[in-house]
Length: 534
Image 1 (cartoon, rainbow, N blue to C red):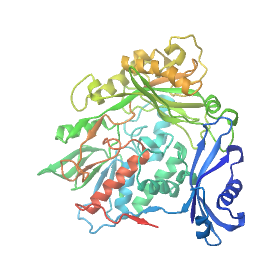
Image 2 (cartoon, rainbow, N blue to C red):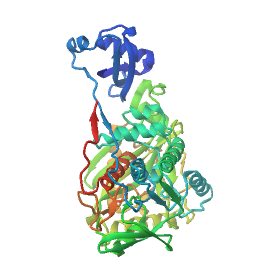
Image 3 (cartoon, one colour):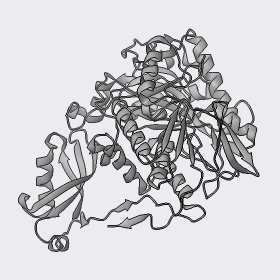
Image 4 (tube, helix red, strand yellow):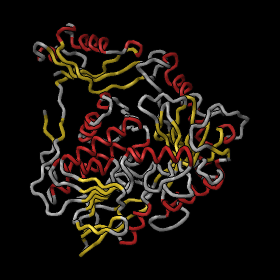
């Protein structure tokens, strides 16, 4: 096949027939000479508001020889299609004791899948419920304020990513990423997830993906236990010798993949008490900002706003200020700000959207980075305790019933304003000054950044836009230290994923889980022959 890069179509003319004609034109052949056309990448180029375009990379198979076409290329856009296919490793031996995976978020799910495919029959411990039950518990919390401490936006099958936009784009480079994307499609995501530059699944479809991935793990001999919290690790001679489940049940094991998620505060405290090496880690905090999606579409696409091939517009912004960098994170087009608490007496915000991204509002986190030297306390868990302090303050300020503090951007900036955006956060909001909720350096950085971001994206600092907070769980506040073999100083303990401090989203966490499972399978020998060139 021949790979064609930078194949650009006007947004209003996008479609299979237009793409086939453009591919034939780039190759210098007739439409009928292409026997197969496969999209490898699709992105939106909105740099020119008067000429928004869709840019493709495609692989084309010709009914005739391809060598003359490649030799005749003068554009530099054509090449022989090459790809690297990830091949999960096979186990050289099956250990007597089953490996245990604690946590069934992205890292734990894909670690369990790789172990199961290798025949190691992993035992998965997940404190929360299956995603079907978890969805009901989350809906009940949003409607009534009754929080389930085990099954919520943070805990349960699928991890925190199951209640988000399901964004799969990542800044990391790893050939396993495409394998992860292909598995999402196999298990129920839309086909375009495999090739979009900014792929997203949507909270609604993620449930199907997670259920099908779990079924594959169990079909291959693995076991997934819900309502099974890891409450202890038994050590012998500096090695893992077993685990405690729900404070009572003892299980023997010598391999524990720990994928706790960034909100497993009791797990972090348990590890600290055991003496497992950890370190405080930088993260970020701030608030969610909501605009009308139509305004974001107009700002990004101009007259092309509403074009079906473009969908709901997104953005990614950063401003450097004297008080620190402020940036947008986890942007959810056509989405909702959601209550994401996992502890009683604390308010936490997050964002999500469904696969159609059809909500009236757009939202993203507006965050400011904090480092261990900023933490008000000392010790490995100082950042975690700071998060909790801010969450409890927000809970009290908003009325003590899981409503969240909210404020218009105009009010926050000291300007006359009226609210143009209806809040999507449930159970509801209470209007308070964000300076009562967040530390002064963070609110100062946000105050300085908003006008700058408004210059980069028209209307971002609109007085009627809405801030809802606090957003405290952007990433883990600790790192569970590990070596090049991915083991802790406690042998047999393999920390991985976002909660352990080694990933920053669904895809990177999944890849970290895969690479950790590889180390378990291969033992002391680094993986070999993992990639096969086609």
